[in-house]
Structures are given as C-alpha cells and as structure tokens.
Length: 443
Image (tube, rainbow, N blue to C red; front, side, top):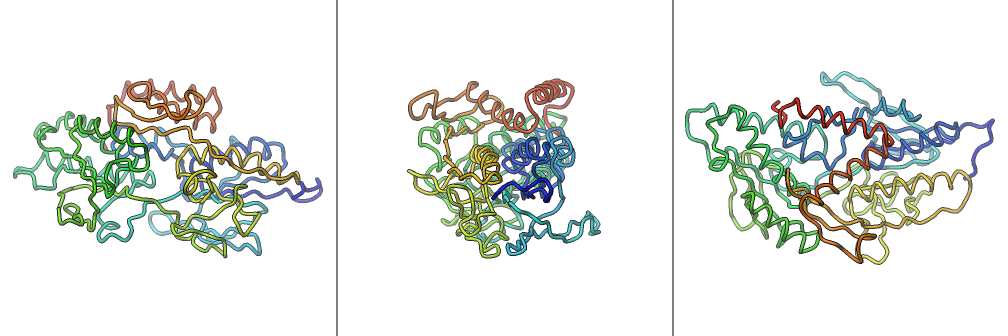
C-alpha cells in the first residue's frame, strides 16, 4: 500500500481494543504518524479508562486502587495525537472496510453513543481475551472472572462485605463464610490467593476484631492438572507451591470442577469445597464475536488466525495482536502464548510494520522472544525465570530480586505510554500517596 499524495485523504488506521498492546500501539502511532499528519489513528474501546491487566488481582484484593492507577483514554488520545471512540466492536464489513460498533448505554439504559460504522484502511484487532468457564454449571452465575476492572471492583466489594457481615453476626460462621476458592492455578489464581492472604488479614485488623484470620479465613486453589502453574516449568511450579504452603493456602490438584453454587464448588470426584467467594481463572478464550468474523479464519477458542506478518490469513488489511491472535511460534508446539510480554512485543513490531505497509515496502515477520515468567506471591515474594541475555537458557529467580523485576515490568508499560519523566513522576507520587492511605482499600 503506497502512502497517499498530500491531496488525498490520510490513511485511516483503526485499532480495536485498548489493552496493553492496543493502547501502546495507538500511542506510538499517534506520536509518530498522527503527530506528523501522515495518518489518522483511531482507538475503539468499550471502557473509559485503562488498567494493566496483570494488576487486576491486586485491585481485587484491595492492595491497589483502580482509580489511582487507571489511565483515561480520552486524555491519552489528546496527549498523543490519536482519536478515541467509546464503544464495543460487534461486527465487521470487510467489503466496505468498516468496523461495526454497538451502541453504548449509561447505567439507566439511556443511549450515550449510537450504533455506528467506523471506516478503516488498516484495521488492528487487539481485544484481548476473557475467561473460559467451559459451560460449567453455575460458573457464570456464582463465580467472578477477573477480566476487567469492574470485575475486580465487584470482587473487592463482596470481599469487604463478607468480612463486615462475618464480624457483625452473633451466630457462628457458616461453613462457606470467609472462604475463597480460585478455580484454576495459572498466574491469576495463584497471584490472587497469595495477595488475599495479606489483604484479608489487614482488613480484619481495621476494627474487625471478631474475626480470627488464622482460624476463620481459608484460601484454596483447585486445579485439574497434576500441579499448579501447569503452563510453566516444574521448578517454578514447585517453588510457588512451597511459598503458598507457607501461607496456608490449600491446593487441590488433579481435580476438575463440575459445578459452582452459591456456597462452594463441587469436583468430578464428588468433593465439595465450601466457599463464599469463587474466582474462575481456569482457561481463556477470545471474544465470541470474533468467531467467523465476516469470513476471517478463527480457531476453537475464537482467536483470529494470523500469519507471521500478524495479518489475518484472509485479509491483508486486517491485523490482530495479543491474546485474540493465534500467532505461529516457529520451533515450538502451539502458538505465541497469551501473555502481556507478547502483546507488548507485537505492538512494537506493528509500529514498524504499518509504516512499511504505508510506504509500500515488504513486510517483516514477527519473532516472539520469551523473556521468562514471573509470578507474584504477595507482598514479600515472587518466583520466576528469566530467559535470554542474562543466561544461557533459563535462570530461576525468587525473592526480592524477582519481585523488583516484576515491579519493573509495569514501569516498562507505563514508559511505553508516558515516556521516562512522566513515568518517574507518577511512580514517585504513588509512593508518597501510599504513606497517607490505608494499606488496603476499605470500600
């Protein structure tokens, strides 16, 4: 595709989805092509603000304030020379090159933005993923999936309410009270129960003197695989299990959940685990609307199948990145894993890829570089592995050094969105504000 002459309209680049990859891509394209008047960059996103998804477990536990760490899309678009359009994509017209956007409603059901179509010349779909409950009876009704900041807010409100209710009642606790079960022991489930170990005890210390954390609070993981963190190395899994054991977390491995109710979960072998709060973190899929989206190729979990160029297999003008893309990973079984580091790398790659496309130059092929995996285990511990430049193969790390690397990953994301100085000032401001606030959110 050749760059247009100055007398013709600017090429229209539309990015759908403002997660880590989509927002980084919109920001960088806005700072280059948008600022120079070389393209019109538009971000379509259903939410009004952005929170880095790996932080959701902290927001759910109350150790991180969503509003204090969220980024407003409208402000970001103004600062970085792209357009922000509120709305959720629900269809595609490839013949007309239009993204179909559903109407947006307020809390009273009144229309904020109408149904509309947004024209594009280049489309990037980056809508991420959502939890997959596999149709398990009761999961949709009784379990919470930490897909969005609203999910994290809902979980935290229920957590605080559960503790207040338990402290105020005269009768003994019911079997399920103050018990939390996470179904699935990937990073989300493991990090959440580790974070809750500290936050629930801090919460009880704020005047909830009838709750004995050691006696009353129970945290559990349920995993169908033979070990926790089944997608990661056995050494990392064993280290995480050892640390969770020190925290008193109960781990039920080799057990598949067959039903979720208001008072707990039932497994395939007939066991029943009482729980007042159930978090579903056992598998992911892409959004349902992506399946056979106007003839684009998708896989069994609704991901759009892409070539190494990140173009979809049936339309060169449509790209996909992040969790919603099934991207080949040469030399490995399966595709590029759905991780934040993959979305970041693909966003960086697509900045150059789109510029090559506009200039009529040949496109490159994406090569994923696995930097390793890190799992936060609460306030004082992290385990993980680093791969690449620091060692040949993989280097296992844990403790405070691993926690510092984990903390640095979020700063790298902020740097991609804000640059060095603003990230430094934001970090300093949040460090200062934490000294004047409760250790956890109490509402």
